Amino acid sequence: MRKYIYLLITAFTFSCIDHFEQETGTFQKGILVVDGTIAATATTVRLSRSVGIEMESTESVGIDNATLYVACDDGSRFSSVAYRGEGMYEIETPALDPGKQYCLHISLGDGEEYESSFLTPLFTPEIDSISWQKQGRGETVYITVSTHDEATHPPYYRWTYSEDWEFKSELYATAGFVATIGGVDYFKIYDLQTSNNIYYCWGSSHSAGFILGSSERLSSNTISHNRLTGIEPSHEKLSILYYISVSQQQLRKEAYDYYMNLQKNISQSGSIFSPIPAEMTGNIRCLTHPDRPAIGYVEVSNIVSADLFIPESSGLYEPPIGQCPMQVVHRISKDYISNTIYEFIQEQGQGPEPYMVVGLPMSYAPVSCMDCTTRGTKKKPPLWPTDHL
Image (tube, rainbow, N blue to C red; front, side, top):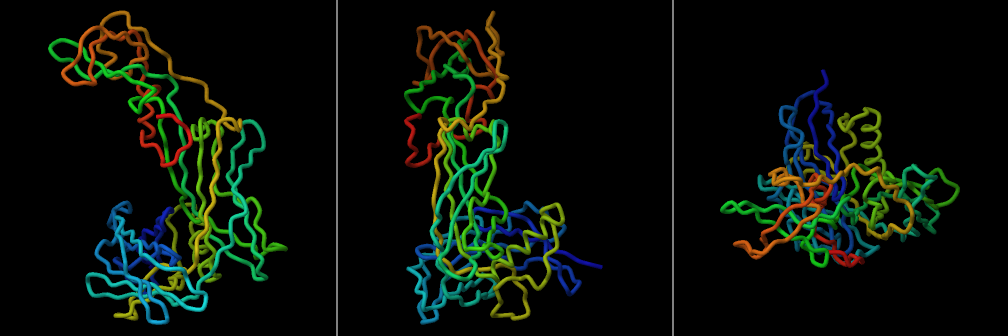
């Protein structure tokens, strides 16, 4: 009878849940899971433990008590580590020397020590372009990456990306109900000239899964318009300004095969749950107990990046049909307490707090139509080019 353990495999900006088939036929949990890249400037690693089938797969299994360093085959070590939470570590590393080899060393609180294979650095070619493709009206907008390598051997790649976008509410709220104090209704006035509004917001996301590519079966070492993600034309990502930052990393074939095997298993099962063959454990080994398994792969490679802005003027956005009717206030009613005010007349009077004023609602609409913070945040990304607040 086959036995399985569940793994949470998360690499920086992508995540998937898998399980690993033990050849021994005995049920285990607590196997170390490692994902990381030794790169110039910063080495990023995530450590976690496999969880048992009796545990919830969403349970956090990140390891927060590890000691890590990057070792070079010349005897030097780089051990300036910052813990970022949820099992994520960042190690300061110098420029990688092509004539040397590097590995990751991990010491856990229970005395276990692990090490990745010593590898020479791979040097990733630059991204040629990030672009979009759309066949016609109503069709998905695809974000693509293009790159090439002058080397004669076929390169293998993994891509990750992060997205930010600005959007707005369908209706502009002029005020919002705060409280009734002493029988008097107080409201908060919204202002587009300041960040005190719920009209402009920002959203963010990142890649999920394994985005892999290779020119192995191509006539040249050129990858043209490889699809990274698709956006429906009615999605508010495209409504004002969309931004994507793409990271590209070259892999050696062993790493590519490792990630491709995980990807294929997920695709064949039709689920994020699928068996990983025991031989596909990556390049992590336990030093203190050589027979103890570990899962993951630590590559040694520089990472390059490129980005793309898509403004509303590109014409890609196809607004959905509005479903936000305004309702007129015919009498004093508490209906607007659970809604946002569309039109508002401010009366004389200041509330007990500076932001509170006395007023009279004239009309209102559902919060989802007027409060962008129900779907995003007022935290504007750094260096965002629009002047909206």
